[in-house]
Image (cartoon, rainbow, N blue to C red; front, side, top):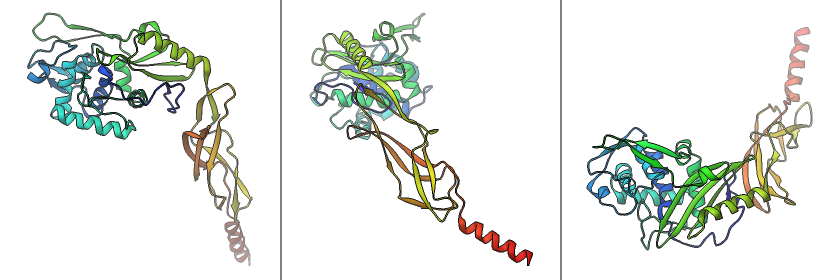
Length: 336
């Protein structure tokens, strides 16, 4: 269980165990497609996509949909045929797309993950960890298009050769059953068991969770989220309108100036926990100083771990004494 904003781990059990992930793979497939493609791109089902096994939206060979329609089929109905069609469109080939998936995983920090396909069908070299998959989902949920897709409960998309559209229904029942649910993806194979990436937002705290090989996946997800909301409260620590202390000024009309942050720093805290703001600023600065002038960095620390940082700037103007004296000399000479 992660805090979506800071990435703080709120609860874990065997979070670094390497396990198969089934169709939760498609979180990365969708993220890459959104990042590298355009939603109105035309995507065609190849012979390779038409022949893929497992869950399907029943694409016909040569059938063309927009990338957005393919993504709806991918994330709501978990279409493996849509996954291959998307992979070939974005990566030029399935193997090219898999390389993109693994490169993106490393960028995100999912270093114990390896993708071998874009859909999640069993493969000994296709695995992740609960922690890695939560990191990938957290990155994906930063994308507004991805967030919109995975929170969609029902959609219809064209069905070539039919007089009616495909009707898609999201397999994630938390969207209708759990207050504040945000998504994101189900998955199942006999080898992986039931896998679920899920999330919700309540009272300013958004959580992202992952369960792998979990028989009571939806019930467990609800218990985990309830536990986090009962234990943690998003806590404001310091914001832009509040003082972050003072810093010495040399050569100024006054000896110090105030400091403030450029952004709000907050973090989920349990009862009895405390957060610290650690400033990385020089011992002093030289006048003139102006509001908004960069001074350094502030880090939000809980239990020795950093959960956020932002720029520290001056909040008050300090004129230089030298300028004042020079002006006085000019005025004195002018009077003489």
